[in-house]
Length: 353
Ligand SMILES: Cc1ncc(COP(=O)(O)O)c(C=O)c1O
Image 1 (cartoon, rainbow, N blue to C red):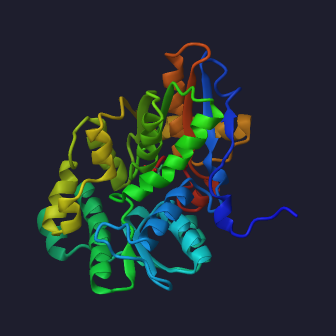
Image 2: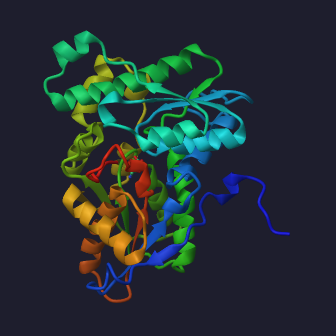
């Protein structure tokens, strides 16, 4: 007999595909890790399991332990909520997510996917009128204040409820630790020959975790970060700060963290700050929606990879790096998620992280 006992066993161990058609014009090899094949549909399954299992051991920012029947929460408009909802369903925890009104356009498939796993899902509370009217100088700041209001809500819920653990993906090292497993697999799959690696940056968990594993195994590939050029959501705006090479907290983050007195974020270091502190990435690519979409369409039509726009952006950047490399060198990136989770919400296939 050959069977598994839990859907958690299906996380990771994804195939590594060599792009033969999309990468036909470059001499170097371009490989993609097929992370859309994870059970909830994205690479976030790796970090969701890792963050929940760390919380079970009390490896949280404040030492709080996730008890049987406890509640896991986070604010997310992306792939983290479906992944955490999936892991919590299998492990028997309750889960509570709030999403940002400003980031959802129309009918969100990602919220529906999240909802299918049975957690509580609702909209984040709004920032105060005072913040919106007196402190937001433009649309970018207004959108960011909505995100921070969601994070502050999570912070308070964890503080006030002994059963709740806020996993806080933006600051949780176990997010990156979970993605380390992808790095381990890549090293094994390429017999340790990795010349360049990079991916889109949201929380920074994926690029940081895989990079940490490469460095720990003595590899020193060229590391490239990928961010959206004109993202309609705040993540993209922050990534502009990142792409311009500012270290520390992006100014907009600093401003609203202080205004809303989000103590945890004032005192801790985010994963992106950690990555910058290590001197990585070596290079940033700001990719437009048009370029991401063109490559995502080619990945689907020529290679059969049904992926979202951030995967298209990842491969766009990987191809640019591969153009500068020689025959026999290996450039690796990730196929993040499946495209169907954007149906309804982003009919125009916008590159978001
Ligand atoms: C579609 C998509 N691409 C890329 C990313 C970036 O991943 P990470 O949060 O590990 O930086 C995310 C998550 O933020 C995402 O949802």
